[in-house]
Length: 365
Ligand SMILES: NC(=O)c1ccc[n+]([C@@H]2O[C@H](COP(=O)([O-])OP(=O)(O)OC[C@H]3O[C@@H](n4cnc5c(N)ncnc54)[C@H](O)[C@@H]3O)[C@@H](O)[C@H]2O)c1
Image (cartoon, rainbow, N blue to C red; front, side):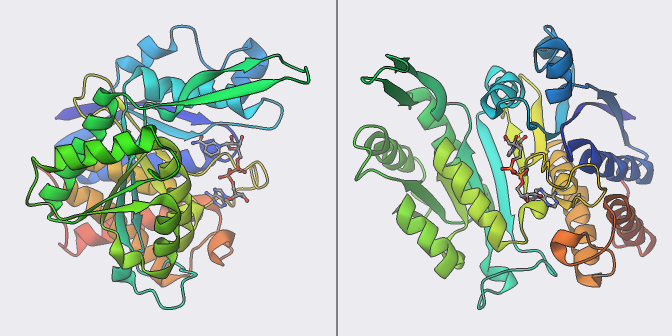
């Protein structure tokens, strides 16, 4: 039997609440499949840990994580610890040191998910965002000069290396080719006259190796308008760290909200573990009340299953989520229901088990 080792970092706020439902689904998948199982090790890192130890994770934390096949993260950040400390001390540290240079965020309107766009049908919203995840505007490069003086100046430098830009764009072309979908690049070459002109140039250069992939290029302002007005324009989308961060929150808003948006941070060459997480934060406003929507965290379990090579089970988890959404009897308040976080997790497990019982899904032997 194949054993997958998962490092679980529940994190802060609603992180532990939604992660425990994701693990519930993961364990259910393992019980339904004789061929594989998951071994979870828990790491209590985050803002509470920071309050006790003055750091977001153990000094040897990265070595401990490295021994695992994947990392499953809830969310980090809580009032009392500045966000740039919690983010750089854990989440961004892992993304960077494990060279998780691909951030995959599916923007897909599942059946039953609420959509604020009046005329959009389910099939109109089905995008795969590929966001550069290791450099760009989030490289952490810059300076803060003459602090507190009248001549104070801050510099935040975007870093776009040839290696970093080429590899994310090549990954996007490969993905578009394998899915037989069109590829859109989102940039801002008219105003960002170095970084984004370079991005556009690399997009065109790499594209010569993929004459079979149909492409479009949009400025980020136009792209945000089209995502609302004509979301069907987008299939696979590649963009920079900052633009991807913002556009995928917009994408979440048109496909069911933050409670339904998942993200995977991939190290495609698999030298280091990849990390799977809901894209929402720790939601301090609802933390501890047991009403957080766990579906985004469960969707990231689906991404993990796909990454491990079980695409049928990845899709099955999404079908189970869709069933819960269409039945509408067990939804958290953000989706108009009154159910608790754990009840939604239980319903997803029941829907998944139902698929196997009805022989719509075969266990991996
Ligand atoms: N990946 C991460 O760990 C991550 C991402 C974003 C923000 N953060 C951190 O989280 C903290 C709070 O940030 P924020 O308030 O800007 O963003 P947030 O995503 O935590 O919350 C935004 C709004 O969406 C709601 N929401 C989010 N997830 C939900 C869910 N699963 N179910 C129901 N409602 C949900 C919240 O209640 C809140 O009203 C900050 O410290 C921030 O730095 C962490």
